[in-house]
Image (cartoon, rainbow, N blue to C red; front, side):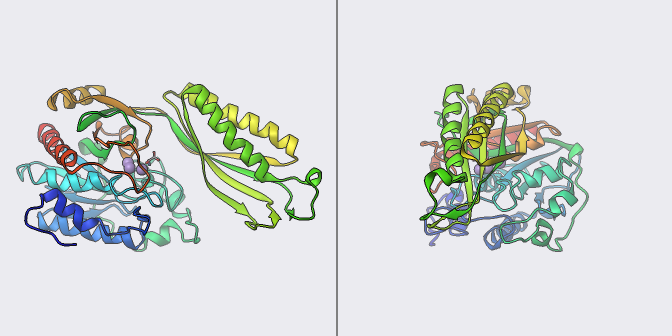
Length: 390
Ligand code: HGY
Ligand code: MN
Ligand code: MN
Ligand code: MN
């Protein structure tokens, strides 16, 4: 990767991290505490030390760089996450961290800021989204997290290893958190926007069990095929969401046995459902589960549903959002359907999010993109906000 002199600071840093964890698909495989994400952590430490910023970890895998004492009263925190969904885009997460370092460059050194790289925001390795910020805020306890295992059976605790635990986090002393993030919907027309809320959303594990059997010899009337009930559920989820203006997706499907010529005994999938308000979300999920359970009865299969990491609506600090919007020349204030560490932190710290325009809105995909000009606008906006808040 040649870094020619004409490149902007942003383009230079972006070029440094772009190859890290990139797959042939052009998407990223940056799972928490795996080699690519550990390389990004090394990059983070180098950026911090180049700026004489002190680096600490909190023992739960969250990484921080500080101007001034770690967790000092009045410090404003910014940053985001390095981890990605499988073959996700390069901006979701890292843009907030790169922008934080470049915004810090535009502030006097006396401004007390912290830059965070939260661990396992996507839940792509251990299955619990925003695991790092949920540990930092005490929403999840270390022993609960320690037992989480990835698909290779490695526990979160083993993945953490003997990480150096720095000073005890003091989030009650943090004056505010501002997370900059690429926008992931299609609503932002200007280079920068401000978050008003995060939709209520959650993940429901759905286990469809039936009777494994021979695909060739078993008569259709004798089958108890969980794939059939699963397929019905995919259609039911799509229909319920469309009827209610909600968003529902069946993903991360596991089939056992996963063979061409065997009727599976188990199909496991996760329902990701989100809606603008909790009542709608509850109604949509209840309806999907009710219809699928009914269908299981007809198919002779069984359905077990386990709610995981359900998050109520996050309404960001309204006065802070308005203040930031007017500071940024009346930047639009808009909700998002995506979960963020900022959403978790907002229950404990006055929190705001800045969105950088994503022309296509496509995210969690190699096609995710933001223009350098809009990223520069995001850095400028973040610097203004951090200066105003410190
Ligand atoms: O899934 C989400 O909403 C976020 O990208 N973690
Ligand atoms: Mn994401
Ligand atoms: Mn993200
Ligand atoms: Mn996030």
